[in-house]
Each structure stands twice: as C-alpha cells, then as structure tokens.
Amino acid sequence: MESSSLKNQRTYIPYAITFLAGASYGLTTVVIGQPLDTIKTRMQGIATTSNASISGATSMFRDLYGKEGIKGLYRGGLPLIIGGSLMRSAQFGVRCVEI
Image (spheres, rainbow, N blue to C red):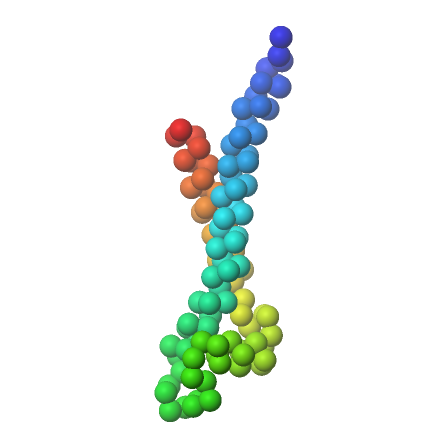
C-alpha cells in the first residue's frame, strides 16, 4: 500500500510542473518581446526632424545597442518579468486544476 504522503506528493507534482511551465512562458515572452517593445517605443518618441540618422527599427536597434548596450534594450523589464511569470504560472496552474 502507498502511504498518503507519497500519494499527495504524486498529486502535487503535475501542478508544480504546470506552474513552472507557465512561469517559463511568461519569462520567455518578456525576454523576446521587451527589446522589440523598447525599440518601438523609442521610435514613437522620436520627432521626424530631430534625428534624421534613425530611419527604421534596425537603425534604432544599432543606435540603442551602441549607446546603452544590452541594458538599454531591457530597461524597465524587471517588473514585466516578475509580473509576466506570475500571471502566466497562475493561468497555467488554474487551467490544470479545472481539467
């Protein structure tokens, strides 16, 4: 016969895996999307006459990366990483409980 603690442990493992998968999904979304969003936001903030040397997203990426490095691409991303990981893990975990 199985002990109740072993049975409970086997019950919780799928939920833990589901929450971990959701957190990974949230983290990946921010890691991939944050630099693109930063470039988009910077491009929206440029007046067309103020900086004629930046003409597109690739040019903006080179300029931003050259001046600020990788930190410039992920500026302000920590709250998004934490929030996205928590939100997605909760979504995945709750969905698993419903099934």
